Amino acid sequence: MPGWDLDSERIVTNVAQWGYDPARIHWLFLIHAHADHAGGAAALAAMTGCRVIGAAADAALIAAGDEELLSLRAAKRNGTYPVDYRFRTHADVAAAVDGEIFVVGDVSVQAIHVPGHTPGSTCYWWKPTVSDRCSAGTQCSTAASSA
Ligand SMILES: [Zn+2]
Image 1 (tube, rainbow, N blue to C red):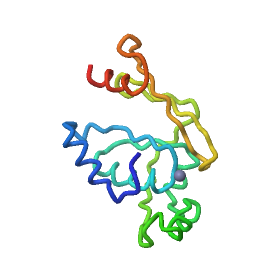
Image 2 (cartoon, rainbow, N blue to C red):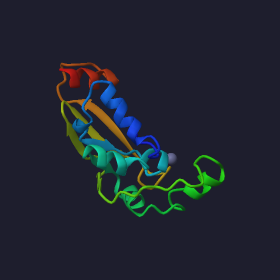
Image 3 (cartoon, protein in one colour):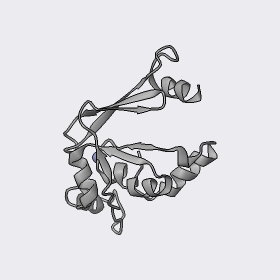
Image 4 (cartoon, rainbow, N blue to C red):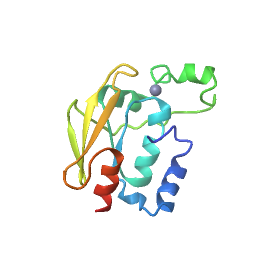
């Protein structure tokens, strides 16, 4: 989750402080277009060169940055976002097809469209591609990436 772009540099700094090279971030999977989830996508892509993935319906919202369609006007009115916040658009979101599988190292990531919260809301099902390395959940990602 790239956040709303107020913390993008901190995210990259934290990744480096944890001992990982931010330049090795190759993928950014967006679950939906709202600013608290996609607002930092452009900045993170610029800082790391990562490929941004999301459903086509939300990719269009992220590219356009329309505050009404992104629910930003209402969020600013209710104090969720600062009134001077500006969504940074990103025109290069690769549209994930429902069921599409991305292979990320030893993990496969399947996009599962779940429209509702936004037209392009998407879940991702992470699975190890090497079945004998781990059993389930986030331990699989850790085990697969450290192997
Ligand atoms: Zn949302």
